[in-house]
Length: 293
Image 1 (spheres, rainbow, N blue to C red):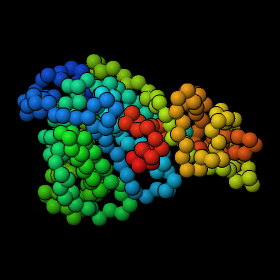
Image 2 (cartoon, helix red, strand yellow):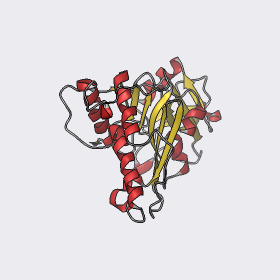
Image 3 (cartoon, one colour):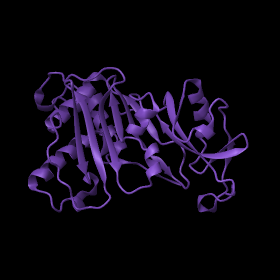
Image 4 (cartoon, rainbow, N blue to C red):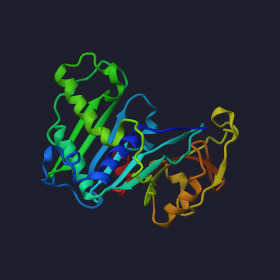
């Protein structure tokens, strides 16, 4: 097996290196402006970067997670390295770090400098089929700023048909998003490792396995693992839409899912089910929040 390391991890580490080694320097106070930018407190969303749309099966959208989410108390959750095996693990690779208020201000000041604390301008629409749209959402100054940029991650392929002004605007979005989602770098020795993110609740969707389908018919010809469903109070037969798992049951479920793959089947009352799992982020508390992200 091998590991892939998304740019989000490295870019996050760039940002945190600045936060941990010099938040009071000119590099972290953009333009030398020390005036704080108001933002929501606690678990309320401050900044989120996500990629939506594109060519993919519709049912996969349920398990999608934002690339990075920062909330008011400084908790930052981001996608990390994923083991490249088939079938992949059922649980996504999520990590968290705690950013102090100076760090949150550094992010917001970067957003202001990039022109993102304003209504979205025209970013253009490159002639690329079935690309994803990068969405940057920022809650600050008692406002919500949403910037949607189609095919932002396609590099040179996305240049055709764009004006110089549109290209400049797109570069500003890339510049801001790189705080959390962009370039590979060598890690600084002063940077501590992030911790695995453990959600307080999970959204779950179950699909019954066709009675005529053999257990051995797993993707790639592998033998499918069958696990007894550990939560008798949660009916998988009634979880075709979405069921929220919270409280102590979340910990129980983590214990089972950490060794499961997307091909694992769960047995309850003699029936087999496949699962889709969506850990809730700090700013989410319902199935509706998870599905709407």
